[in-house]
Length: 113
Image 1 (cartoon, rainbow, N blue to C red):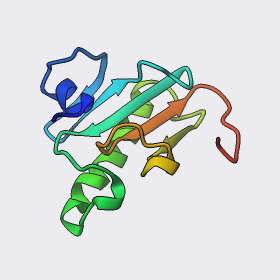
Image 2 (cartoon, rainbow, N blue to C red):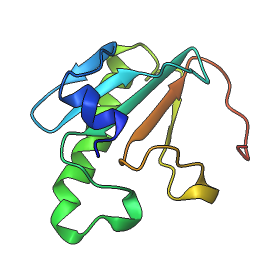
Image 3 (cartoon, one colour):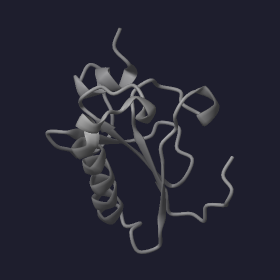
């Protein structure tokens, strides 16, 4: 069964795109936790970062570089932003498809949640 992200990638479900390339998409979160909250999602399904393999190294790097580019595009690179990857139930994972949260445009406290 496809995850919601796979359905978005396949254009079966609409989403507000912030970025689209051959390896990933970036979409605005439908339940934003900051004024800027974008999800960077690989087009190739990897359930979670804990299941990534050495063969995924280039794709993982691409996700982080894309996050930085999207942060610049959305105007939060200068003021700062946070990148979050949830892994597993206790890590806050709600969709079993690796994705990077980009949060910005407000002060973010530490430690989180």
